[in-house]
Image (cartoon, rainbow, N blue to C red; front, top):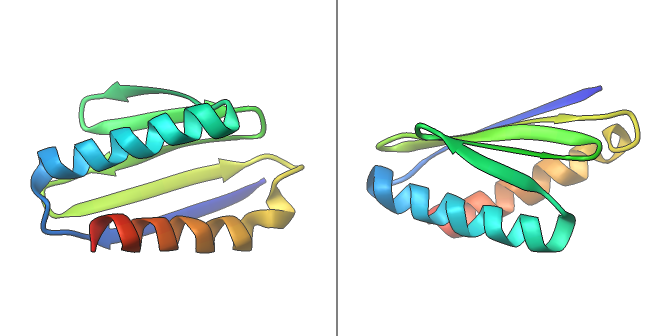
Length: 91
């Protein structure tokens, strides 16, 4: 099992960052069959072979992802994709 953790700062405020996280979750749900729900300021998501969370703060966003055995070899690629999406969305 592989773990990914990416944290980025932002200037969107908590609500702005929550909106971005919600849009991302909607996209993941439609493209990759991801289920998600909010638990306070943490968006929890899950799909076969992976589960994780997006913790939204006033000035930071932290993504944590656990990959199962089949997705673990793709961990580096998945982490780069997460970093690119966060940099684009929060920049």
